[in-house]
Length: 81
Image (tube, rainbow, N blue to C red; front, side, top):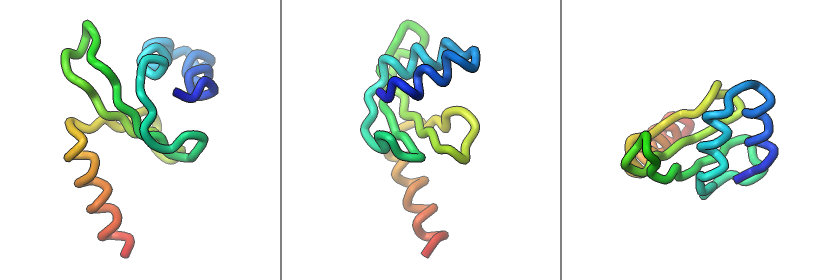
């Protein structure tokens, strides 16, 4: 995960999100205006989670599954074309 992003969340007083980010797997958007990551299971969540961060979205945008994320991307692409 991007260390600068983790530090930002710590500086703004959201250590819970910073901790989640530090254990996440960044699969898209390294040093970009968008990040997509896989959040591994934890004691609070027994299943993998899927988060998107973007400069124009406050906080994380969670998705229930990879399928839900890709469906969202397809809808966006159709709207833009």
